[in-house]
Image (cartoon, rainbow, N blue to C red; front, side, top):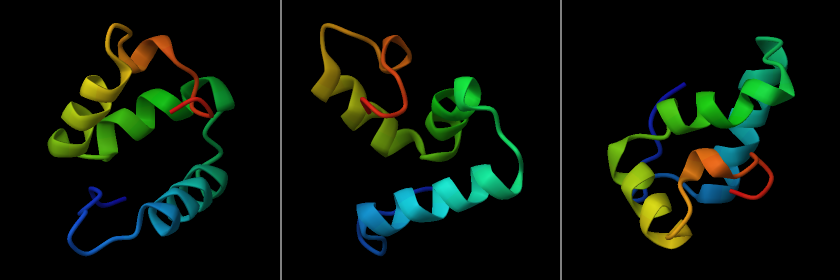
Length: 65
């Protein structure tokens, strides 16, 4: 799974691809968020951190992010 590139990817399409990736690889729901945070890329992770202040991204569920 490639990093999210805001210049080339549409976020909705990226989430659809990520859902497909997790389905094909039998990723348990409890691990989806941590996997997402690792593959989404540093730039997007930093943006998520800013949006979610005072919480951390890992304090949320995948559906909340």
